[in-house]
Length: 348
Image 1 (cartoon, helix red, strand yellow):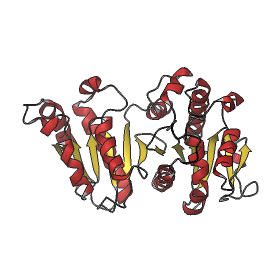
Image 2 (image 1 turned 180 degrees about the vertical axis):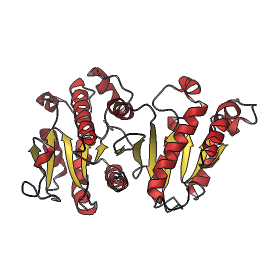
Image 3 (image 1 turned 90 degrees about the vertical axis):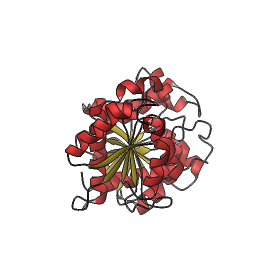
Image 4 (image 1 turned 60 degrees about the vertical axis):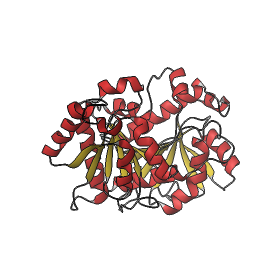
């Protein structure tokens, strides 16, 4: 089987995206069975290569069709093919600054990669971090990658998921997935966004992802659901959302055949998940899931968008302007994001 073609978007030029791509490139090509390319600006990547000094050379390409065995060795650790997206003004962006030019370039790279994935030109998209402020300055008013992908793909039922593969801190051989019912939104708005249907829908998305990881012929994925209120509401004493919304959502998913239980207090359910009781957790809001999973494996965590007609994975961290362009950015999450994307292509 031919190795999957994976498109990596460069992210914000002022952040750590370019340097983690170049820094991880030799390991990506040598250790992951894939054919990677980058959507971004070649000059920015050349600067990152100069910073990392790991022998990676940047090759500007005009289309994905150039990646043939006659034009370029498909697994060359020394050559990074870059499909140029956006104009040259992004080369004037200063490291660690919020700049509309960086936001514009990042947005154009993302949409070009999405369109190529929808057309079947590439097999998956892996995204380096963008800065939401720069994105908005450029006139693109999205909370983040997830919403861009959903809109471009015409999808309304989607979810953000963090996935931590098997390894240290996890007993489960299948890793652990955390799916979020609400995404990038103010805390005061989440109560209205959590519904019976949204809880059940996110549980289905978690189940579908973990079936791919575990294998279709194996057992059902075991899913645990977080409460929203302290102590799971204490039978309505601290809030009624568990009784009126979350529990009915769980029951709805059970009727559909899912192996699911809860809601359980969020401060204890992740301990059970860590010890192998669950394959996936449904969290009610962003930080409820993110904090716990990142404590288990910050540099191995991967962001996956569920519900799309294409495969999209991402690093589980931001642009890190305070660390950008110093040569010290951690590359582990990007490597894992590419590994997981490659794994998912086999069952997509």
